[in-house]
Length: 306
Image (tube, rainbow, N blue to C red; front, side):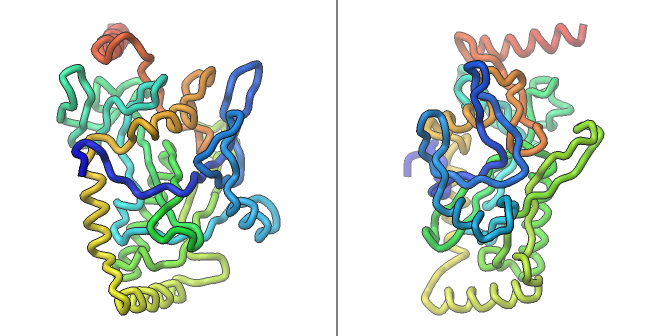
């Protein structure tokens, strides 16, 4: 195993809320009130739709606002990884990632382990430079039983709701989260921050027309069948946990381009995410070196304090 390379679930495609549009020669995010499932391939700046997108959309009465899913792992925190993150705008590479207690920060001397008091209490992350960033992996259909579709979000609403649901469903099912038939749901609400206009976030629930009791019964049956053929879910969770811990940051070189295009498109001002309620973090502008960017950030904070 290559040290420093985080081993993440193989990605079959992407789940997003919204899309990129071109206006006046600039690629800008446009909000939407429905899911879009795409491949990992782009043509002419657009992500190609995955066949499942049309298949699932036809099964609904209109827009795709629910996606039937299962999870790869029983541990909720392996399916949804959420951290406080600060990204480089131009490259999409992480500069600092923390969990509210400790963080890993890229410096000219390498990766340093530092205290992480959360964005509100961190001088480096003040001013909106650091925000929550979540990655959710789900299985859609039976195309790849060890692969996943990824949903990236910087929305407090989506991260908080998904984290709570995952832990609740795991506990209620007797730690059989990977066997539960569930669905991602798109919900809307209005807040003072959205000036009472609708914002959308992602929730998780039992599939339409089913109940929690029926879902748990199906999960127990699937778990029994898997055990009978030797499927070791506990070992799979351990392998995934070891793989995630193998790298300082989850995003690699190949992921950084997608992150930059998805959250920080050229000309988008503050780099707002088009996925949820536009909670994307502002990022440090690129400079000649990481030290310059960190010094630039410190000077900016010092000027505000003055």
